[in-house]
Image (cartoon, rainbow, N blue to C red; front, side, top):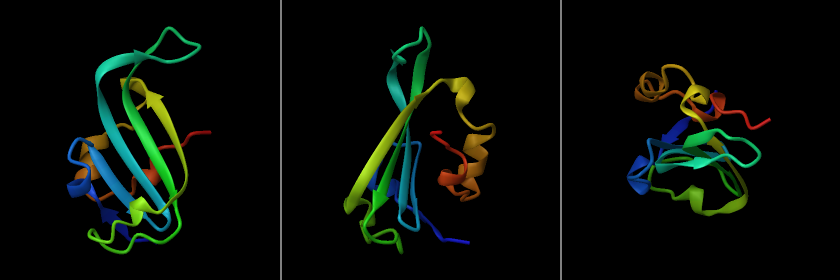
Amino acid sequence: MRNVIDYSADFPDALAAQGSGKLFTAVFKLDKPIEIPGSRAKAQYEVLQYFLARDCKHADDQAWRDIQGSRFAHLQRKDMPKRFQAEMKRGSDLSNHFSFY
């Protein structure tokens, strides 16, 4: 099991921001819903993932800056993992909750 590093201090606007191994994940609530391309649906959340050059080891290491690749997704409220807030309070690994494929 990988350690989950909380980077919330570096991302004060995020609902959650954390790293695990060489993967950084942040979840943001959008100020205003946006239309999802190719759909009439409106997204209320954005999930951002960075693939990192080095492992996340502690909250002050700023490993999230060493980006080798990235991806993002816009999600509707119904697509957010159930009990999201409760899971984040328990220190759950975000990368286990969001799948882009």
